[in-house]
Length: 471
Image (cartoon, rainbow, N blue to C red; front, top):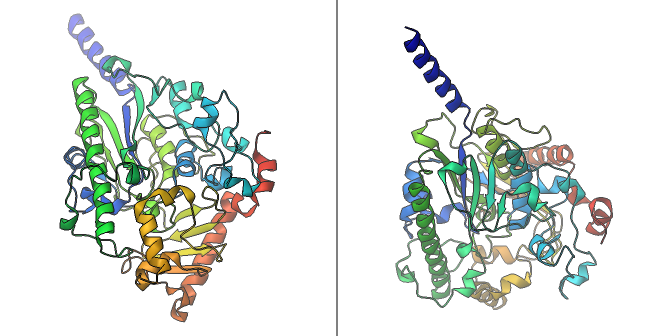
């Protein structure tokens, strides 16, 4: 009887210990892809067998949004659980960490075109004061790994955040628990021109879906095909990662997140406050066939990633985090009624836009109506599609819908019925029948701006003095 008792006690102890084992969490991150461009969100113009296989085993969420439609500010919200405009990381290229890191911790000088800003590169001390979730994971026994991206629009202490950064990290089951971010940059905007002349993996003439914001011509079709070809190459690379995870016994028992850092690599996508710029593909594979009751249609934001990962790891979530955990031990039962997105300066172009949406409507407030939405971002002019659309615009050869993005000045307010107008082409703010909706959304947006203490209201030259390191 004593031996039986010892065996039972040992078994119970093992079960108890197993419950305390932290789960592995792997992130598959791609760049510059809107939700509607992916096959598991309904696009029939491209097949991505490796991602589609994972998606079949996952919870595919319908409403994940980047806080900003551009990489570095959006990434700052991911790692801090905070809205960029509340911590001073909202202006694109406040700094570029990669250059800071590689230049022996010296700030680079702005390009000649950017020097008209009269703003130095700077890092927000507010952002630096937030403990990032990978740091918290490390303090709780995790090995944290990042294979590529360190640009969070402010200075991070790499040695505190990542156990391994841009190193040859050998996946091994004995390394657990692991939190690892794998970034696949072949889908980045820059590859729309760098890979423009490579052999296409889809036939442009067979594409079924041409976004109504573009004319249906050979250059648009070619550009779409380039992006789909890049997606196919990304999917091949993801397949290699999945093989490694399975070989090391790390696939079945791990959480796997997949998402894009913001919307697609085209004009009126990346850097656009519209759904094409902020709504991204997102799914999560749970470990070992685990089931979790969850609302797949709830509004999710990049600020939710940090608290959710900590919740999955059963680690207390910092009270200052502004996001909502949607999985794990501390999963919130509260669902957003309203989803907020923003944009500010893009490279050399100052701007400020705030937006809020509910299930049906989206309201946009433009603080610089004199600016076109089609800001003259020098980096983007390298794209053949951008030059093509600009040429058609200047020749008055675009339809009203296709030319909408170029309008200058733009209206101070925009309102869209997303259920009937998903590409946001019919601005209802000029219709007196929607006055009540405008008033309602104005109040909701103002309350949110006050709640997060939105720093976008402060001119950047003054903001630098308030929040930045001295140069």
